[in-house]
Image (cartoon, rainbow, N blue to C red; front, side, top):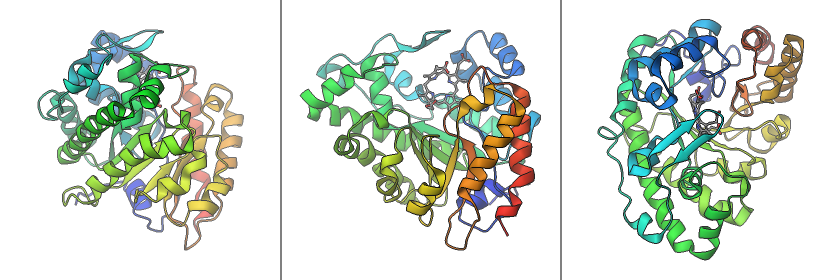
Length: 358
Ligand code: CP3
């Protein structure tokens, strides 16, 4: 065990009684911060930033230094795994992520191998080690991955998509190929997360950004079952079993009970979920993380305080059977957000949440 100076986030994830609600924010290191834009400029491009551990460390710590958030998240991307599998990720300004070599055939799926986390993805592990050293136990470090379904979506679409016609086409027309792809990605994710923990990640988050695009039955078959394998693999590994794992399916509010049944420690909620309702449904089984609408961060500080209080009040008092709440946005903070609003958000949550923890 380490001697964390601020272990509020980890104590909350362990379901312990805590003195106030911890806060971190998805995409807390990002383009809304001028210091991030300066470091990215110095790196030249986003991928070089991810692949240079000292620079990835610098941007990971920027929001911690500036705002006093209760957790740091590794600066990287979910698309590192497909990049390491040889799909060649490029990220162009205004375009988003694109793969030069997307999956286009059954033969492409057959040729995929599981990347060695300490080789092809060694830069991620090095970044984690450098960040842990620089954090010096001020706050815990969150490691992460994309969900198999979300990663496979990007791999097959070749970029972001509005209708997911290629990946859903594969799912409906060749379910066996889709499952084969998802299994290779799942096996890669499991090794990747275990290596992140071995390198120093103190909690884990699975981003299932596109699971919400599926019907319930297909969500169970093509997204949830693979996330469930990931949770089981982490929980049954002696070196990882004490590391909390949080699942976030954007648009997954319909499936909170199913997600909680995987045995994960927490669920991320997007802003469309009523947090009081989520608490009534699964709040005695899992920690809830979320869920203010990120667009509020592009408005004014009064709106930020108001909406943050609405989320805190929505979760309400932390009773003896409630697992707990971690404040976050319902999705990543946008490049249009005002840095002063982040200051206001952190202050609002840190100064006003103790009343719910009596
Ligand atoms: O949260 C953090 O601060 C840690 C870093 C992080 C990034 N991406 C940095 C990033 C994390 C956890 C991610 C996860 C990620 N990446 C997800 C899942 C979460 C979600 O947002 O749903 C997804 C779907 C991706 C894929 C991805 N990467 C997209 C769609 C984009 C482009 C969209 C955009 O915001 O421009 C990226 C690029 C990216 N990843 C940026 C950052 C800070 C912007 C790159 C830049 O500097 O231009």
